[in-house]
Length: 190
Image 1 (cartoon, rainbow, N blue to C red):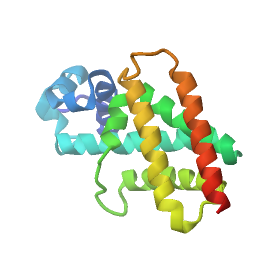
Image 2 (cartoon, rainbow, N blue to C red):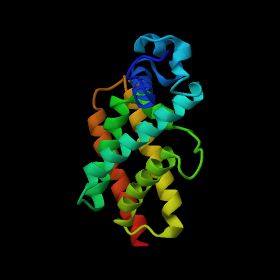
Image 3 (cartoon, one colour):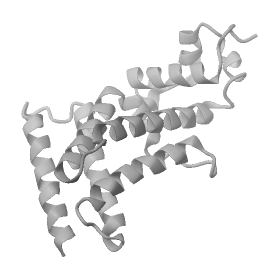
Image 4 (cartoon, helix red, strand yellow):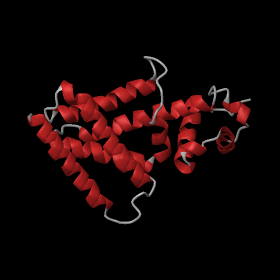
């Protein structure tokens, strides 16, 4: 019998919190059930499988990331929008490394998938940044991949304490933004 008041949203939120705590790769239904005060089979009243839980966490994370970057960028353009997006993205990954990890490589289940919808809005935010630099359709995919790779790499390294040899990661982050700004400005002028 499921715990009174427990629902799919609660299970996914608890799974996301657990993923942030122990790491996405260590997420286990038994541990989640214990945390929720139920037996593992009770989780199947709310989720189909571990893969379903992982997909739910990815959708939750992408929705949260979408809100964070859109709020940060609101009313900004050019370098200011780039900086706001990068800072919002990085802060989300550092604060929620487990749930962010769920988004990497997550597959869409169809056109109504909340992960697809939120992911599309995050891409739209990145495209808005790039349009502010005059990046055209011919260059857009390459520019999107460059930004995503750069932001993902920096944030993931910071979240996993990958910058151990120096404590000036804030300076490196600012340098990275200036580097991207110059490159995007140069490409946009062509």
